[in-house]
Image (cartoon, rainbow, N blue to C red; front, top):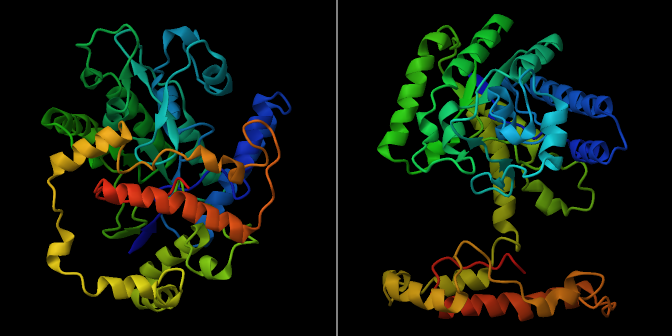
Length: 405
C-alpha cells in the first residue's frame, strides 16, 4: 500500500511567497530574489512530505500565480495583445504581463473556493505550442534533491472547459473542438518519462460537474489520443491511499497560531497533522481510530459543539416537522421579492449600521466608542445574527446562513 497527497499549499507557513511576490511587483526585489524564495519553499514542501513517509509526492503544484495560467503558458495559449512571438514563456510575461497588459485576462473563482484563476481565452487565432517546460524542470529539481515526485498537470479537457472564447470570436466556436493541445501534452509526457517519471497525475476537476454527453465524450477522445504516450507510466502499486481532495488551499500550520485556544487547536487538522493521519492510515487503521477517537470525543463534550438546549428542543420533533408547509415555487417567489435576488448559499447583505463595530473608524472617519469584547459579541448576536436568522425563517429558506456577521 502506498500513500499520496493530491496537492499542497505553495504560499508558505508565514505567507513567504505572497510577500516575495508583492516585493517583486513593487520593484523592491529582483526576479532572482523571488526565485530563491520559491525554490526554498518547494524544497521545504517536498522534504516535509518525504520525511512524513508519503510515497507519491506531487510536483508542479507550485505556482507564482495559479495553475491554469501556468497551463496557458505550457500550451502557448497567449492572447495576441500580449505581443508574444514564441519561445519559452517566463517571468516577464507571466508575472508582469498579467498585471500591466492593457486588457488583462479575466479572473474568476476556482469552483466553490475563495481562490481564483486566470480564465484562458481561446479562439482560432491562438497558436498552441509547447512554450513552458515548468513541469519537467520542477520534476528534475525535486529529483536533484533526492525526491522522486509525481508531476501534476491540469488535464486537457478541464483546461478547455474552463476557458472562454476570446473577445470577438464567433459564437459557434467551441473550445472543445480544439485538439491542437493534445500533441503538446504528448510532448510533456514524453519529456517527463525521459526524465524518469513513472507516475503522472492529470487533474480533471470539471468531472465533478453535471456535464452534457458531448463534454463527457471529450474525455474519452482526449485520453484515447494520449493512451499510447502514457504507456509505461502507471506504477506497480495496486492500492494508493490519498487525501480525499487537494490540500492546496489548506491552512499551512498551527505552529504560528500562538493565540489560538488549545481546545480549537486539538480539533484542527492542518497540514502536518493531515500528513500524519494519512500515514497512520497506511500503517494501521486501528492507530488512526484511537488517535482520532480522542479528539472526536473531546469535541463531543465541548460546549462549543454540544448545546444541551438545542438537543432538548430537538427531542419532541416528529417526521412531519421536517417537511415544509409551502411548496418550493411559492417559497422561491417570496425569497426573490425580498432578497432581490439572492441565494441561500450567500449571506444576507451586510448591515452597515454595524460598520463602526468592525473598524477603527466609521464611514465619516470619526473614531467609534471603544467597547469590550463582550459588548461587541452581544451587538453582533442581537443586532445581526438574530435579525438575519429570523428573516430567513420568515422566508422559509431551506439552509440558514449567518456567516456575514
